[in-house]
Length: 604
Image 1 (spheres, rainbow, N blue to C red):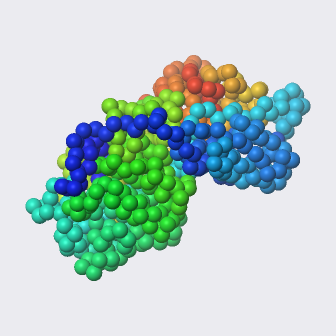
Image 2 (image 1 turned 30 degrees about the horizontal axis):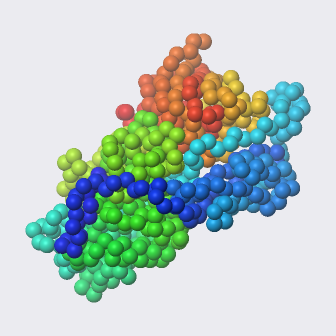
Image 3 (image 1 turned 90 degrees about the vertical axis):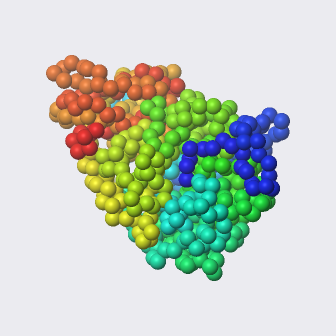
């Protein structure tokens, strides 16, 4: 697979010449880039009458010249909304729709709003927070680039599983090599190599579901060009009469995902050895590639993630390739070196940077699947502060190892990562505002090998043991600042209520705050979990955790970014209160989750 992305041109046999120099960043200044669509940060939301909320829009493509949108509501008696900012307020019980419309092209996206009757006081007057509780000042406006509904749902999955399977499962040659065990690449060779007796995709996906993985991604075609479905643009596939097993593996995985409630992603390698030996031009292959992609996107929908490997990705018109995906699956998250849905983390070790922004300068850096200028390991691992596009990091690795390299396809003699190593990678991916993508290659027997099953189950047991008990349950919370003084709507207690769409916030001009969590007695902990409400953007850039013991406060750990989730690891301490000190934020901090845990099982 090698997401260690080659920056060279694609050599198409003798049909093309190649200078093998890095592809220059695309020049988007010469021509106007038209709007092709729009998505919205939430497709449905439930609020109470009196609640304020803010939605955000994302114009497609990310570098379209005209990003202007307007907001409207189907029923102004139920929801009022600012036409420019998307800041809204629920007025009365009922159901309605909020719609965003692009200025150019009049593309639209909608969010269904369900409004329940108010169970809390929303007007000034006596209340649980005192006799003069202020009214609702309104929700903070979204800050900077924000996730679409598809991106938000994708990141909240957290755990993803990869399946590399195909003729390389049996031959050991995945297309990275100049030849296949000394033999030149050919269709007949690949068909001859693919010899599964059984394929139990049900077992693959059940293993993922049983262990908390919310999405699986299948290599429908790897670099060798062998296809696991009846590709209308290729005969190097399971439908070929010369193939010994005609199982449509993509359909088998699709069916298993439907059965176990797991989302499905698809990998379709842009690099193809069969195209190289065919002598077809880049333009010819781009048309074939888009036709194959359209077939996958429609026949096996819904597809929540499309994986474009950057290894020899080629000089395609990637905007038009992306449109093929979005036409069939509008909320699909597209992975590549430069998204636009999510980005490679810059390594295949499975870890993100300690500082990790969900935003990156796609336009400014000229990123595309086939272009990685400069020191990409650094900026992909960390993202860009105030980046122009929402494009969070996906951290890929394989459970199998060949020496110090990932074993992407099954190898009986390969070494395996331990459950402890997987736990460490969980902390360094999900715990650093990334997504955990673990390759678990099915064996030559058509199943997830028992060795992998055992390790994954041990990892699940370990992870569940760590996070089974939130030591902050039963705690109370207060803060030095609350938005408009309206504690009912934006008070610190919302960090503890286990509701995703309620959050702590300060006034717009307040970018620092102390939040005190007073525990239900003394607790011993060594893990702290924080969560930002990323539908309104990523904001916090530095914070410190303190703990109180015997009346004295002591610094425990400091961090930079938070994002969807941040898990800090530190020494075990016993305390009766914990303080979150937000020391710097790009806009008013907006936090919706806090957890306190004691990891006594991983040894990390």
